[in-house]
Amino acid sequence: MGKMKELQIETQNLARDWEGLVEDILSQPAVGSAVALKPDEMPATEDEYEQFRLVPDLRFQPLGLDHSVAIEIRMFRWHRDWHQRISDSIAHMHEILSSDEFDRGIIVTTVDLPDNLRTQFYSPEDRRVEVWGVEKLRELAEGNDALSGILDELLSETILDDDLRGPLKMDRELRQGRMLSDKLRQTPAGLKGWRDFELLTEEAIRLLFGRDLSSINAQQRTDDGLNRMDLIGRIKTEGGSFWAMVASDFSTRYVVFDAKNSHDPITQQEIQITEKYLFARGLRTFAVVIARNGADQGASKLVETQLRENGKFILVITLADLCAMLEGADVGEAPENLLFERMDYVLMRMGR
Image 1 (spheres, rainbow, N blue to C red):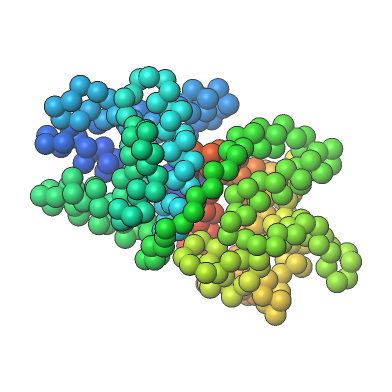
Image 2 (tube, rainbow, N blue to C red; image 1 turned 45 degrees about the vertical axis):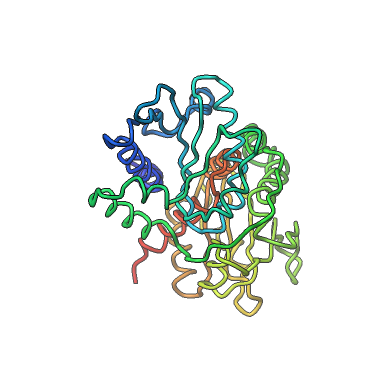
């Protein structure tokens, strides 16, 4: 099994644990019955993605009732994320309910949602969609020490801050992640498609992270005029978020995004080019390289060397990663989850 496949499996494990726990909680004799509806493997083709796009995570049959409820689980690692993503999750749930296979929908989140926050998302004329927080899962698991213990353990592994903020104003955005991912996949690899790939990547970064990064500027040249950065953004450090954590842990105020559209995995040479954009005194020590086909072994080793010796973190993600974040954002998933998993993987495998 290749390293990328192993990493994909590792990335999905925590979300699967949540799905299994929610299924077990809802399948208690006093609650009802639940069954998972999606396959273990992520969709590998466009047709598979479309086939399962409107399939919820679970089908739930409440005890004593004759209707089916669609369950979607949204795993958030920072409390702030749910504010930004839940409206898209609700819109996606309404799409699921439009098939008339389910009478109601419930979105289960992995954060605590006080009533004054949770009720922001209820429409008086449409009560078909509910939003549950962890407190609802605790209530349903009460009296079952095993399930309560698993819930506490999963929470400790999942949540990376302890700051619940709100209420916040929710602005419904045009959900265009799938459209962008389709366009990105259609761009030719190599020189022929490099400009389109660069422009679409910029649009994707603004869509995914525009709320956490300010003053995102494109195509800035370094002082020597020889190297060009695709994008640089200033990290908003207020509140708890993935990017605020990056700013604190790596002593940086800015993040650089560099798009690489080569046919083959990028090499040490491309990492060296990105490294020239980073310097500690400029509060610029963190970069994300979007490499169409990933990085080779030499590039990965240089990433570790730069981090170990110079404190510069260059995170490489693939086109497939970017498309997964875009398509997930359309249905309310937090794109920061994937970046954190990739970053965590690099840090945990490093030697001294």
